[in-house]
Length: 355
Image (cartoon, rainbow, N blue to C red; front, side, top):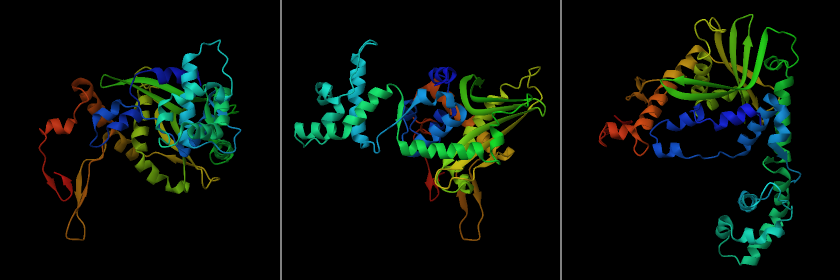
């Protein structure tokens, strides 16, 4: 992993993904919990990002499994727990063998092992885990600190990354070998800034600085299942407008009076490719309205219809509102929802929700 990314992850400033945990009628205590998202789509997306923005770090961050099939997630977690305990007991000079049976006493005392198939006999549980997890344990030893990914995920990510990088309609975004010295491309670029007195941080996939046109373009890489022309639904489901609005504020913090980018315009876009319909990556340039809704949200509103009842559209929160929420909880604690406190636990409700 790039040192600047390591430093970024260690920094305690707030980022957009954590800020979005405050959306809606949240339990603020969940904001304090770190829940690691793991899924095939998340893994493939991370691989694609690395291949495109920091390919030199790929072998430092990932270990491509030589197994045709990984064991079940449950057995993976049991073996990971065993390996983590072994590492915790080791010194830098300790040689860890790649044979799971050398560490059976650690395996059988693990918390996850105890919960696994509680009605089975001890020998049956051990044999099952050794049978399915021995090769995985070996790969944990070989990978040491890297994320293990399957051959299938790696091959899919490689196809998607090559499609984005080599397609004539999207290759301009990278243009690694450009001789145009008036264009600067910054990959995996961290920005630290303050908003309303709050320390913030953003990690941009790509920042393109065009010195001649006086433009700064934020590019975020997205992968998705389904056709790329369905990206709009993903953008709404995952609140990508909030993400890009936050990035916009990060870059805007660099545009200061008498600074090097004082007169620069900011442009934003998503570079999108499908993992299921690969071959036609597209670039979505964000409109001013897209960013402004991400910044300020949309108030609750009622729309008239041709029926006997109106449609009630709930409020959509923006980054500015979420920052105010965050500041409130920092100052007042995370034990109780801000709305409940404000209304003294007393609300009115109609057919469409809380009035």
